[in-house]
Amino acid sequence: MKNELKLDEFLPYRLAILSHSVSNSIASVYEKRFGLSIPEWRVIAIVGRFPGLSAVEVAERTVMDKVAVSRAVSKLIKSGRIDRQFADADRRRSILNLSEKGRQLHDEVAPLALQMEADLLEDLTEDEIGVLDRVIEKLYKKSQLFAKPHQQG
Image (tube, rainbow, N blue to C red; front, top):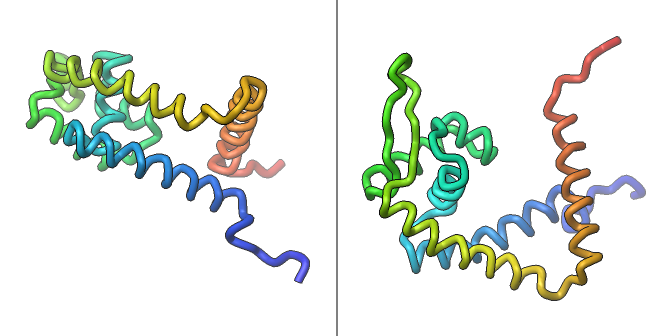
């Protein structure tokens, strides 16, 4: 059959498997060493880079589900890693910042994350890494077209 779907050769499936494999490897290190889940680390990383975001803005920047972000933020507030204040004009909008404990954690995890990325890419040449970056960007942009409703003309 010519148009047979072979899941193990299907690009979206292969990308999902790669992402899952890499995320699980990293998650096990974050969990064991720091007691962090991947969503919690993503919140810490994005708030560390962009202080003062709301949870909704964190969800938008990380492309994570709002419920997952909300859960992660709640756990991080409970553990004293994130401080939450409320905007004066709109009490529904929270402003998130790393606490001192959160900043220390960020500064400890970030170099580890960068080292894990370097280890993952170590067998690729600089040219291959450049091509990979460009291909990922092209595929991401193209995938965004699928998310938008097709306009009829």
